[in-house]
Length: 270
Image (cartoon, rainbow, N blue to C red; front, side, top):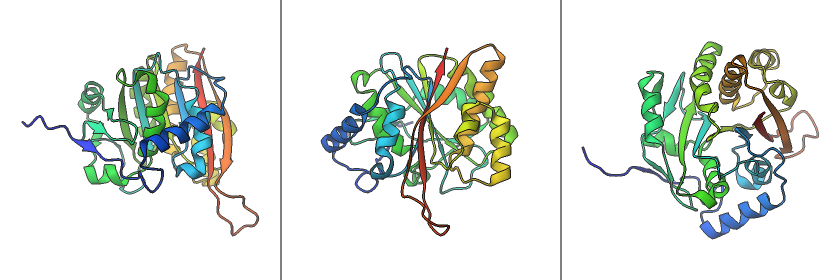
């Protein structure tokens, strides 16, 4: 066995966001400085994964709620845009690169997850093609900057899960969500649906999607999170979720217009 460290390059740097570390740092700093930390420390956040020119300022509302002094592990759940996936997949590398600094994958947690038999491995190609996790890496690095050598990440690519699979994965992740030193980042772009998620009810969310066929591309990661929350609520944990910001890529003025909505939200444990 070779001890070579495998890295995933920041493949969308230079296109979806700047590849210059100092420039990126200043940009993220600027957005974060304009936001209040009213829901800190959050146990989970939902934030968008589009190019930063579209949603960078929106995402800041979620990342401002992260407390780097208590966070030791960050689970990043992103939807798969390029490969059909009926389960969840783990990365096959050790390090995720960002223009700010490298982020280390938590191999201990990865081994625990892999042992369940519920995951597959994504190839490096799939990993680097996908943007839904990568767009959260610079913000994660920035939010955790003051404790940059003290945390690991757990990237998970979430497939097109059935409701029962969302429940299974929710149950699996609930024990990690229960730990205050863990943070969950759920990657999704949106349409207009906020109240249902704030009710923390996975069944209503599923029914809503069936009824309106709304294209929330992170609906499966959100479904997993809602099911994890439900599991913890059964055990008496008290939580609340609130949306903090809402933005659009462009305004829709007629039926032919297309627009993507972005939202930032945070989960608090009381």
